[in-house]
Picture 1: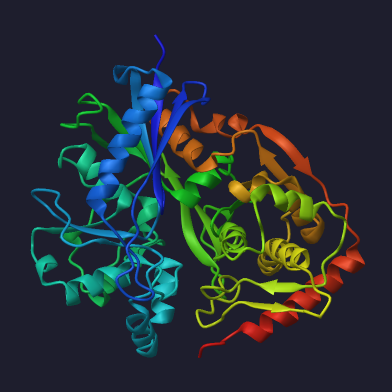
Picture 2: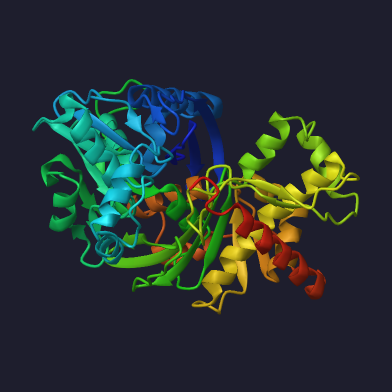
Length: 489
């Protein structure tokens, strides 16, 4: 009898269910989008109840599409958008307010005020994060100070993974994994516990928060949902970017992956001790399995795949098919594009920066701007890599995934620009695969030491470019970046 691992990949704009067989091969998937709400400029919310409905619909769709009997699901893995917070009622599971999404900037003033109080250093040393609206702690404090119905002993605050565990288990379990906990500003990554000083800072009672367990654990069992029988164990949970690193076989020190999605997230496994950086490089927990904790550093670039969407939206690019035609025309652009539409991520972390295009002349064509924009994807990553290499010079290759990584031209450009080997795996769904591997370990289908062997290569891109020309391009890009910094301050 065949058995399967079911993965819920709950992202920022949609939720997908991907079903893997025992050999970690994808056999079925189904995706459902959900609504985004923008009540004020810079505010981003989601309906958590709608998210759960879409999760159930995606599960049912994947089972039907793959003609899989739900009784043959051996275990469940969950990977999720991180930092997003759901306040909900302990007894009923009913959300008490829309989920506040990781992208939401409503707590900018609170974050700045806490920095002025001198709390930035304390927060960074304990959590590896920075005082920023990005993270969960500021969102929870905002809810407690501005939404009267959440100020209640029966209120629970969970990141999306904990909310889904609660709902899938019929309210019997409320747990989060250590990677998601490490993104809340409430969890001390040195002693691996909720931190009393930080809980006080953000006015949170620990009783409102989920129990923190390892990434492979018994998170709960299904109960009272129509699309799955009772009793299926939820065995693996991990935040999406850590899951992508795990899916790439990133279980050892020195392995680096970059996910080229809407934004870009570069993670480097730093081993069993945290390394602390500045300039927006985050220190985070990569995993904890069987008592062994692995750490990572993370650099975020805000606009990558979203840049291609923007080119399409404003008509500079007519279609995805046209992109390859433009990229393959052999003309090197002399346009320098800084896509700081929502500020600059690492290694700047400048929320006041705004985008700019430099080098325009009367002879500039639409195609030149498009190609300059695509070059900016590789240049942003190269700037981040150079900063990280100052402390971690051993980086010689990078494993990649995400929609943009499917484009051969961009991956070769990245290899040339960064003078680094780029490795693209056969399985492009590294995030879901990471969660599947976790659940498989929990179910006894795999051993942790077998994870690296599960990573199979589709294509390798080796650097071919001219180093002198690469340096000249990079220097001009840096000049353009300096011009857009602090634009709105």
